[in-house]
Figure 1 (cartoon, rainbow, N blue to C red):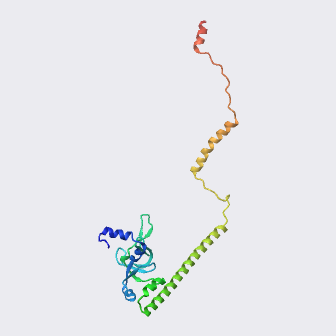
Figure 2: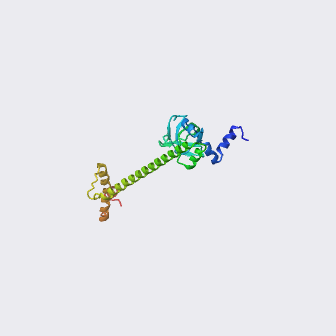
Length: 226
């Protein structure tokens, strides 16, 4: 028996097992898909084209790039937020705000689920659609591989050019000295010269000079005092 208390319902939603959470990440189908597949909603998968029905991004239609089962959120291409640092991050959106306009039918298991109880004509249409989607995926993969190869070739060419270009000799490089640097170098050289002279010439001793007699002694001699 389920509880009617909101706190217990939230607790059960948060702590539910993943196989249950995966089923809850489902969205409504558009009218043409509703009539075609004879069902109102279906669990969302990466690659489905989806239209946002509520929120700031209402009316935006693009493919699903990621499905987060633990948080029960979906990331859509082109729906981003700018952080405080300036980087762009995908904005998570709840599945209840979305409307599925085109299904990704490349998975066999999903096709079997959808084809249950449908006529043969609709089954053939689903298979044709799946083949077209698979071809498009292969073409996209090839284009991505070619782009990666082209980028690698450009990098290799740049590295070769760097290796081939000779470095200029050190003698030809002339550094322009400013007036401040010249003054600083001159100040640094001055004390070095003084120390060199001091090391070369030993200190000269001054000749001993006789002390002249003081005025008092001269007066006493003149007066004849002993």
